[in-house]
Image (cartoon, rainbow, N blue to C red; front, top):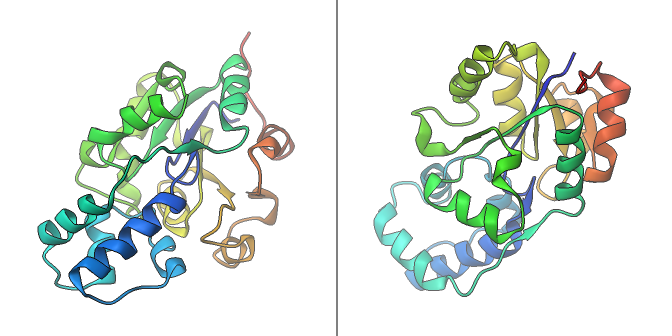
Length: 223
């Protein structure tokens, strides 16, 4: 039985790649360092920002790079993923507990939630990267939310996590949560299936989520 649905944020609930990929590359040009391919960067999304920077440019001074990155940021406006807000409203009406677990820092997530038109009150739990010392793909990144859910009587095997990266899948499965892969650019469905995910748990549109949940899990609805 599924009683709680947790979401990754970037490139799951909002479109991030369009903005962030350009900024990563522009900052690299400013610093005259290696220019990575866009797909190389995108496949690292899901990790915390410092880890992404170190994987792209090992040993780089993160503060110096961050200064260059900030210079590249314009009047950025993120967009919600198509149908995500509508489906979240449906899940909430059905009595499911909803939450967010993200590698995005707490300083920006509430601003971007409001900017993209989501209602933060729809989510009972929002766990940003700086809430804990662990990060995806480490399964302990879910410790806080698992403990919080257990207080209201919801176990890991009654919880599903929806994300777009292999790091999301590795962390969720290691924590004993169910997982649905949202195919949004960086990883293919075949890659998730090869990693061990059932092919019935791959979606390409949020519109698919209610039927996918109903077809693969027993759901607990509101009375």
